[in-house]
Structures are given as C-alpha cells and as structure tokens.
Amino acid sequence: MGQKVSPLILRIGFIKTWNSIWFAKPQDYYNFIEEDFNIRRYIKKDFKQAAVSKVVIERLAEKVKVKIYTARPGVIIGRHRADIEKLSDKIKDITNNKEVSIDIREIRNSFTDAQLIAENIAFQLEKRVAFRRAIKRAIEQAKSAGIKGIKVRCAGRLGGVEIARRENYKFGKIPLQTFRADIDYGFAEALTTYGLIGIKVWLYKGDALLEKTQTEENER
Image 1 (tube, rainbow, N blue to C red):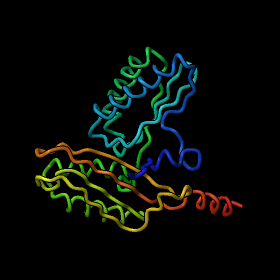
Image 2 (image 1 turned 135 degrees about the horizontal axis):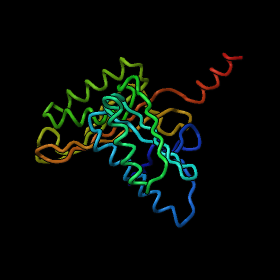
Image 3 (image 1 turned 90 degrees about the vertical axis):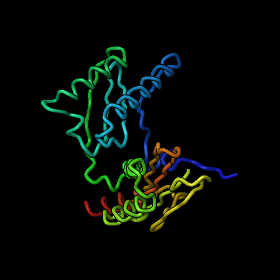
Image 4 (image 1 turned 135 degrees about the vertical axis):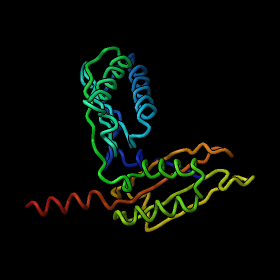
C-alpha cells in the first residue's frame, strides 16, 4: 500500500508552519481545537464567494488573532466594514467572548494558490464543464503565472461514467520529497449530479531556502 503524507505537514519546521499557532494546557486543548474548527467552517461557509485559501489562528492570553488569506478581500470586509464586524461578533461567540482581531491578507494571483485552483476546478465541474477542459485551463493559467510545476488529480465518476476512476495531469516537476521545495497543496470536492468528485492540486513554486539565501546575499 502507498504511504501518503501531506506535503504541508511534511515541511513543518523547515519552510512551513502550523495554521493554528498556540500552546494550551491539557484541559483547554480540546476546546481550542473545536473553536478553531468552528471558526474555519463558518468562514468557508459564510464567505464562499470570497475565495478563501486558508485561515491562520493565533492565540495569546485571552486574545484570538485570525488571519484570512483571500483573493477577494472586499467580499469579507463588506460595505462600510459591516460584514467584517459581523464576522468579529460571530468569532467572539465561538470563542466565549475573547478579544478578537481579524487580519485580512490579499492573494494577488489566485492561479498561484493550490487550494483556490482546486476549488475553481470543483466549481466548474458542478457547472457541468468537461473535466479535461477545466483541468487543462487551470494548468495553462498556472503556467502563465510563473509556476514551475503543477499536478492535478481527479477521482470519481469522471464524465458521468458508471465506473469511477482516477486521472492525473502534470506540467513541470513536483519534487515532493525535497524539504526545501516550496510545495503548495489543495483539496476540494465537487458535488455533481452523478456523485462526488475529489480534486487534488500540487504546485511547485521553487526552492524556498535557496531563494532566501540568494536574497540575503543580495542585501549584503
């Protein structure tokens, strides 16, 4: 059997870090995990049109800081900051009235984010776009954005056939076992009329440690 490890988890401590940054006592650990899960679920569900890639949650004493990485920050902020204040109140309810700080980070190019690419392909499949066309279009857009490598895997009843199968599409190289390689990973599901289709996306953005070293040398 294959031994599969998430590319993000594998690189924690090298070039990646956790999406939940906090330390808790044993009696609080369960509650904090549940709160983080509810915060992420609410943001992804309530701001489905905002193209949210990931949510990073930091805790310090009685304060909760939520960083939202999105391609459409205006959807979350809303007119006259009405939506972001509503979100802040909701997070306060989830975290038992702790002080909440929301930081919205804009993703300049959604074609360089694996999670947004996977969700875009899933959205097209739900709109009955041919899966090969949706995948090849996503790969072309990623290539034009300067990505060094991309791999897309779709699994399920592709095209509505009776027997489920898995198909891979790839461009460039994807060094999954190289720790310094900056690999971005995304997963999404498309709920179609003929079943659930899973989409996995791997992006290779270059060697993070090498680029960092070159930047330091240029500064000198």
